[in-house]
Length: 226
Image 1: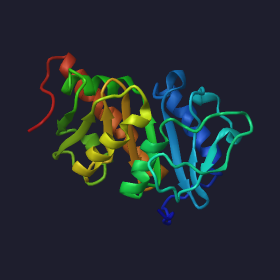
Image 2: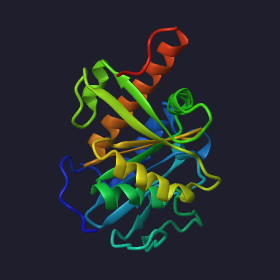
Image 3: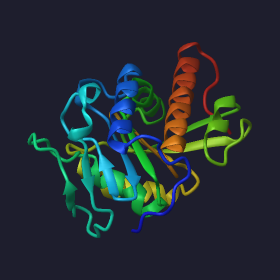
Image 4: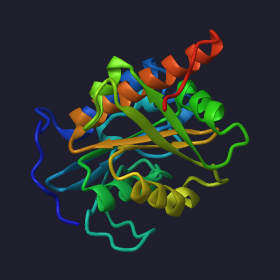
């Protein structure tokens, strides 16, 4: 898995960018209570926020740098890590799904309440399902989507440990090759892109769409699509 050249290369060091994005996502309610995470691929390898920490308080020296040459599902070669005893993100194998299967340049994991409610709306028992919406302008923020297209996002069942989602997330990604997100029932959403700009744009667009559909349901308006 070699690092391909990326558009929109960050103008600041990637660890600083990750900390900035984590603060932004905290304000959006995506990484409350140490949840969620961000990873960005750079020339040196895979940069990743640590696990189990308050994301809005991260410092650049807390960010891990991992090799992008890992082959096994749980292989994790730390090229450079913090000296504070922090742990590599529990999301690591899920992030690597996007790097391996989609050649992603960045991956973002949100615990947004709108993602959780959207999954609950379309998969009320917490099992696999499919989020559907159509006719919303913010669909244009997603790769290959127009506002009158029908968007379908896979929903997978949650597991006790995040790493246990690796196989089902990979299967969902292969079944939905034109979609850059996977919802996890009762948990949140993973979103990726060719670089951090596209990943951020799509993460914000998906969250808007999840909220629009959930609020439409609350108001008794039609939800979903054909």
